[in-house]
Length: 397
Image 1 (tube, rainbow, N blue to C red):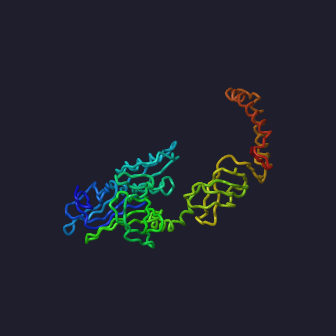
Image 2 (cartoon, helix red, strand yellow; image 1 turned 90 degrees about the horizontal axis):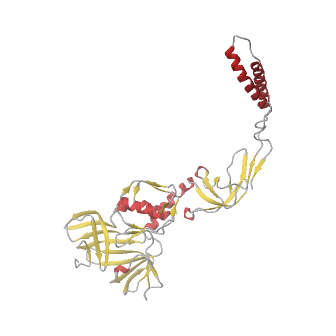
Image 3 (cartoon, one colour; image 1 turned 45 degrees about the horizontal axis):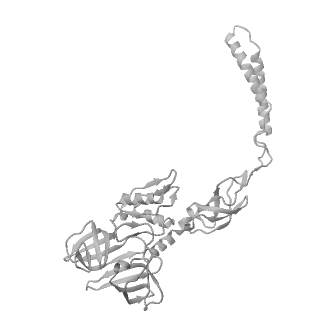
């Protein structure tokens, strides 16, 4: 025990701030009352709260040490190689566990769901967590005070220990609190007070130490991430046009041989239900997709006004093959060509069947064998059979 209210590995905190967000790892930029270098794992103490973290940067300045810290072991910032999963499915816990092992972190992940496949790209290890969050596979993630990452939301708790409200800024969504139970004030906790109107939920907490020795503890209120949320929304807005270059899974609600009405399979994609989307086929065939089957929607040239259904699953209700310019196997030119070939083979075959004069003994043997074969081929060609008739063919249940 250092005896200080706030310390890092026993060195007193004399300035800086520490943020514990609703989603993601906590981080801190602090000044310590020592010029001793710090590296590796550290223990941050604030009152009765202890956080396990890792030193990202450390440098002495003016008799102090300034450090940049993150929750856990600093691994989620590290670049890890890509990894592909497939061939019968993979559990989400396996995917997240591999990413954590690759960057030196520990994680507690939900047991499900089982994914048909998953692709991890080269990049910071935390990209896997953000990717799973964006796809709705996990509701949130955070680094617990123990330093172990949790692939879920902070637990919903209620503050029951005494505290005092010293300031409130409703326009900023900030409430300044005086308490002796800092360990209880983690994101996700709910609280109320006679000085407050209603019940509030913590969306993050900020510990601030100024150079004059003043400490301030603020609770960010709301139900969404207060810091990364706006940044992610801005980035999503800039990337929104590129989403129309994707290929999206939809479920067919109703269909004709020309169009489909459909709804998105993944609500996290942010795409609406669509009506009268052109069903892309070819010039000689058409089919009627079955309601309830899945399909793929794309947008021509990435333009939102030109959706097309480019693929459907399962057996169709009906299939129609339209008329060809002339019968595929019975067209007059085909019949004429076949007749000429058949006549020629018949003539040659008949000549070979008759034994030629000596001394062509070898040729006589060949003729006796080949003649009947050619005659038989000629007879077969004389009666052609249509492979595809000229009239429309339908198929279905």
